[in-house]
Length: 286
Image (cartoon, rainbow, N blue to C red; front, side):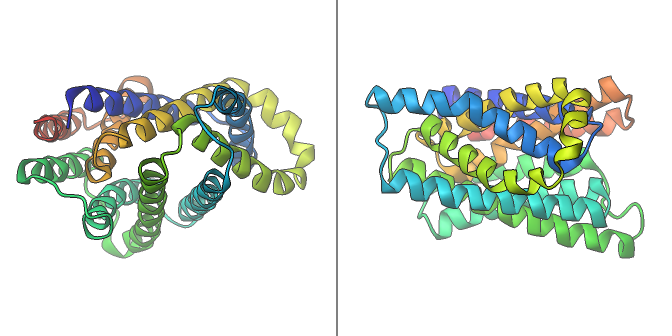
């Protein structure tokens, strides 16, 4: 993979880690928080997408509509399954399994279904990144194997949706030649339209959420689409089988930020995992 593309994905990973850290400061209703930053992201991205269409860089046609609709459905499924997992199992187990299985499934299906070809060194780098992530998150069974099973199952289901939207978005961008900004703007717009009726059922809580979480909503609204648009742009010139594990280096970045901001422990283990991830990134860059 070209070093410039690696830098693009790592910038996306940093933005992803920062918006996840910001979301930890959320204090209000979880669903309304997600709805608010999704709508805010759409308000930012949709005018940019329209500007690109006006400039002739994207055409409003059936491919853009279908691509955005499928992507929106997959992203909503991801959000709902992830939240259901958080409600029924330990967050640390669900998140860890999801972010580990997502890139592995993406890499597997990209090779089997999309016909991507990877060098041995690149595949080794992808596996090193996933291994380093698992080192960073620690022992999933530390709370007892029976308690960890629901989290593993929900995490695996979440990872499957991550692989689903990643593979579809890669196909839409590379095969249908859709502009990343316009494509993701359409996805955000449709997500907002689907989530809004449910949010209106809780409309009495909306003012309180907006007052309590205005800053996190704004940060996530800006950095979340920025992170994913950078990833979509990288997919134009690099195999999604390598993009998927590389973007998950955000877990390592977020883990170190959590150590600093929230005084979480296990710094030595996180450093060791970070070194393994860096080795994987170096291998992918060759």
